[in-house]
Structures are given as structure tokens and as C-alpha cells.
Amino acid sequence: MSCTSLEKIIAVEARKYSEKSETNINLIKKLENHGMILHHVGLLLLTPDCIERGIYNDIIDFIIAQTGATICSARILQLDLYSVEELYKNAIQKKMAAREKVYLWLLEKMMSQGPAMILLLYCNNHEEDFFYQTVLRLKKISDSKTASIRDKFVSFGKVLNIVHSPDDLHSFLREAMVFFQEEELVNTFNSIPSIPIETVKNLLSGYGVKEELPLKIQSYFLDRIDSTIDILLSEIMSAKCKSALVMRKKQKIEDLQLIKNNINSGNIRINLAKLSDELKSLDVCHTQWEMIFLLNLLLFGLAE
Image 1 (tube, rainbow, N blue to C red):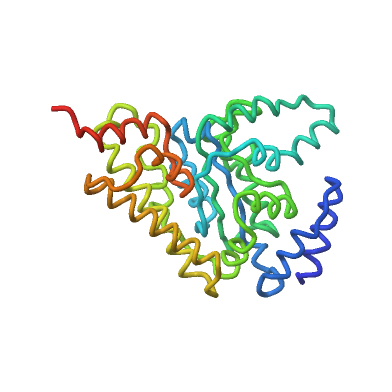
Image 2: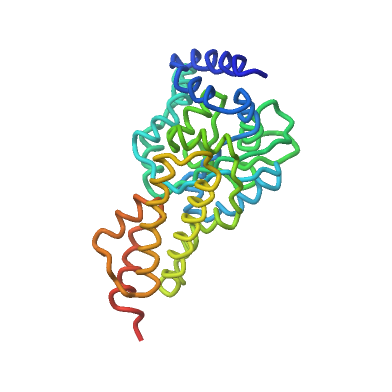
């Protein structure tokens, strides 16, 4: 399939939603081999209810086992109102056209309760024409012999449905650009880095573990920082040119190393009052309770 064919598909799909297709088409033109890689990539969002229930690692294992896919990029993000509306606006539009009930306010409330994990996946051996279609099939509750993610891990209705993936190629590219800059996507799609599964899992190391949290909070934070650094390094190594994006990633690594050294050594030379905001800006997941435990440990140590 040529670049022109992909452009036609996206143009048709965009018209379904009364949206423009130029941004997605411009991205395709920057990809190697006429954008053929788009047949083999997919996006899966693990929503905050999935993270809170502690089933994210099992879902990662499931999607890898079912497809043989590799993870080429991962992010932990706290979704804001704009991101949620951008992510679901096409689905909401379809429901409204079908006169179905729409609970956007409840969806936004759920999405604001904690972090979400975004995975970009790569697979070159799949039944469907596009891999995003494979991910979509494995997401939905179905009557097929292969259990879907929502079957196996039990989604609880329209809002608490544990995962999200795009419905078509236009939506895949548009939603990917909610989480990644265009230059990041071009670099990732042209190079397809492979992120170790354990590195991705450690982005949420210890998240939701209540009883052991005070004792292990330091090591959990160090695990999350190390995994974030590893992913940034992988993205830098796979980049095909030295760009402003690469320089920003290198600066992020320096900032993370500084924080890691301070947490590890107890020799505090950073502004603890701003530590939570700085970690969020560097995509390191944490709750306010975890931050309170960490700051207590750094300032006072463990009680005897």
C-alpha cells in the first residue's frame, strides 16, 4: 500500500468525524517507506482504574503473549481535561449520533484520579491489515474463542473499562499526538526501538502497594526514575539525527540523575517543596501520599 493509499484512508476516516486530515497526512509524509510502518504499530492506553486495580502488569503480559508485539515507547501521564476530551471526542460523537447516553463528566472524573500508562506497540505478524485493528479486537468484549482484555480482566461498564485503543487509522494518529510530539512519533516509527517489558513495568514500581510503602518508597521511586531514564536513552539511541528534541531528552536525563542522586544519598541539594512538581514534569508517576512518605524519609529517616 502506497503513501497515497494511506492518505486516502485517513481522509475518508477524518470526514466521518467532520475533522481535517492534514496533520496526520503531513506526519505520514515524514515516515520512511511511504508510511508502511503504520500497518504494524498500535496504541494501548491503560486507564487510571486499571492502574488503581493493580492489573496493569498482567494486561501488558497478556497483550504481548497474544500478539508477540514489542513495546517501542511508553509514558506515564496524568491526563488533563483537554487530553481526555481529545481522546474520546470521536467516540462521544458517535454515541451522540446514535442517541446513546454519554457520561463525559464521569469519564473525566475517573481519568483525573490517577496516572495512565500509554504504550506504543509494534508487531509485524498479525492477521488484520493493520495492527491497530488487532489491538482493537483484543480490547473489546466479544464472543470469540480468544478472551479479550475486557473479558479476561473484567471491565466494569462504560467508564471503568480498564483500557482504550483507537478505532481507525485516523484516530490512531490523532490520539498518538495527544501523548507524543510529532517529531517523537516520526523518530519512533522510523526506528522502532524495543523497550524491555520490565523497564516499562517499573515505571509504576510499587504503585498501589499500601502496607510496604513506607519501608520501600525510596527503592520504588528509584526504580521509576531508572526506567524513565532507560526509555529516554533508548529513544535517544534510536533517533536518526541530533535535534532539539534529543537535547531536551538529554536534559531530562540530567535532571532525573540529579534527583536520583539526592534521593539515593540523602544528601539533599534540591528544593523538596518543588520535588513533586518536578517529578511530574519529568513523567515520573507518584501519588501525593507517596510523595509525603518520600519527603518524610528524606527529611527524618525511618522511625526507630
